[in-house]
Length: 217
Image (cartoon, rainbow, N blue to C red):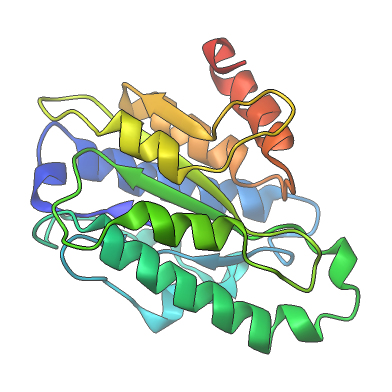
């Protein structure tokens, strides 16, 4: 989920988000399996959800990076509506894909990445929805993981407290999967490295994130 609200038009944030997503796809395709193990959904959001069928639940190898471009054209920043959409998507993914997967316990946990530079302007409180997602029973034996990213370069300040509450938590360390990102290069490196590993636990994601920025260890 990529914040594509109007505030992302400033300070190169749309360009940074575009580069981050395209770099992530490139990393997936550079793996020995050629991106055949990753099913990806790229979902811009604001006060509406920008769904493209050819960007939703498809193999990474089938997405054309040169078609990805975020423009900050989705109005305000509605977190609750976005998480309601993701909850329905996870339920459908379980019903029509995971429950029929031949070796469910070998399938990695679905990873939801939620990136925003601002504050929630919606009317539906997102935390309860995120909690339902984080405890959702799936055939693979583990629930989805939620990773949140606060983009802070330029004049806008993300709601870090809310983003931390939305994120999954590593039970051993007590750390949430919230990451504060202060420049475009870090955003691209983070998304490319942390989201292309097939990690199935919060601890694994934290280890990968620490390779991009040691302060996250």
